Length: 308
Image (cartoon, rainbow, N blue to C red):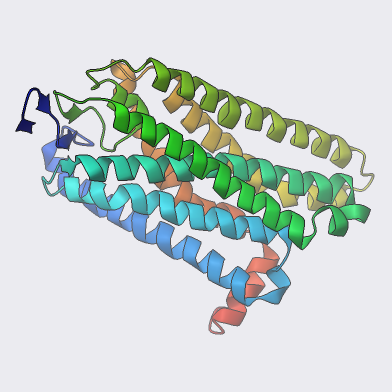
């Protein structure tokens, strides 16, 4: 901290992930392993989709975007968390705001991307004859570009408003990362405008996109039930079941974090929830989306001929 007319925070102190110090080494190894798994799995998805022309379809295009977002999300959080296990818990003010910007950007983009992916599955199953025109290359690029741009603008607004606040102490964040709810608790000035923007973002990113995603799946399930053959139903459902699982897990964790107040016992629960959407989800997504995917397995075999 530096002192002028008032005490101004120049760095924050992040809280331990766990108060049980004997577990620090074990936790470090676990999170390091998950980080490597997330990077490797998502990088494989991006490379496989880029190199295999058979995967140059809207579904895999959006999946590649999701993999890039997952890499960005884990890289924004986990390196600093691993450093915390080595008792380097301080983070500069600029570093904290940078982490806040990128984390908010990537999380918002994933929520929007889930809606785009749900729309893609809706068109594929409910309007198969018009799929190539409704999901043309330009449409896919426009959707993906909008996802990245809208979330970047939203993150810029939230981070800009956060920078306008005065932090005059204390500087201990009750979390292992810099996140909007926990930082607002440390502000010495009014956070009224910040709270208004959070509500607007919650409604847009959380509620509206969730409703659009669920409406898409309502139409999808209705169309699948109309398919006469059991084999046809299984094939149609297999193309969207993985996405539905990921969406359910992700929305549950993000909405819990940003709608519930960041105080009391919810802060301890919030750490576990944050691990789910910044670490576990990016690690499991490659497995959920590709484990039963024959096209992706074929692409991997082309990349690695030794795989049987």
